[in-house]
Amino acid sequence: MKITEVLATPLKTRSVIVQISTDECVRGVGECTPMNLEVLTHFVNRVLGPMIIGEDPLEIDRLWNKMLFSTYKLGPHGAQPGAIAGIDIALWDILGKVAGLPICTLLGGSYRDRILMYASIGGGAPLQPDEMVRKVEDALEKGFRAIKIRMDWGPHRRDSDPAKDMAMFKAVREVVGDDIPLSFDANNGYSVSTAIMQGRKFEELGIFHYEEPVAQYDYAGIRQVADALDVPVSAGEHEYTRWQFRDLIEQANPDMLQPDVVKCGGISEMRNIAVLSETYNKHFIPHQTQPTIGTAASLHVVTSIQSATRPQEFTGERPQLNTIFVEPLEFTDGHITLPKRPGLGLEIIESKLQELAL
Image (spheres, rainbow, N blue to C red):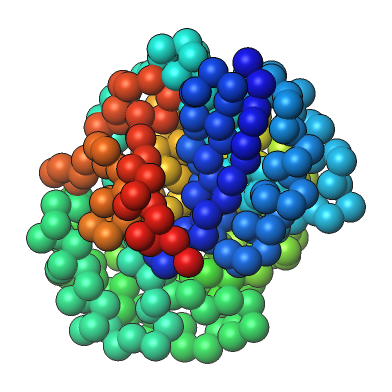
């Protein structure tokens, strides 16, 4: 079997879908990070794709290393692993279809088929507490049984309004009650001292996990916050390889690791990072904001990890994006049941894809 075409298609939904065709009419689908549609599309179509045309799509590890190390000086942060991710996911999809098995089985087997998802609700920075409460109430009505609110501050707006953040968390806690896991994402928005002060208040109110309290590059600061608090502190959505996660663990020592399958080089590298999480006894809760292919790829890895038992991130269904799939992922009663069809379990309707193409 040989690869005959690698094509990335940017969509109006701020997605980059990758399709890989073979000379045996087996096609795989993947997804890149959405951080810059033009750059990612160009990287796949003009740089990485030509590199693997004519190669055997089943030799995934060899092709991953070829793509990474041939373009290493263009990475390893950002566009390079994000582009590799789309191709890698599509290659795993092909392998599953050839084998007639879902990807989670190829990774060693599924420990759970039905995964509790938490609603990841962003845009908190400009909102007032009552506005965030309405978003949370909407998520509960849609069936979510776990919630995370995100501030989207970023390190450039450090300590902008911690009092409002706390008022928002309190208001949401009152609405969801004590039985709903509630997490808070500062999105790198606090100094170390403020992060610790906020974290202690969150602990009193009941918090499930505390995500990126300080700048993602401040490993020493992350360690200070994690050491000072009892609440699990998470980090990792801005790390892209196993080597970066090794350094994150050894220098920052967060309680939870959050790689993103469409950022970190795809299923291959995410599985390597998952092994690190088990080796160092860390919670494994990947970051994921892409609700179709990205979520499916992430869950195939998550279900193959015995210790990955916590709720997983989901930004909610997007009806427009779901139209491009024969059978989209099903979200019911706060859970996604991972499809057991071969590969990812998702098939593209080409005509619908083209309707959304930029």
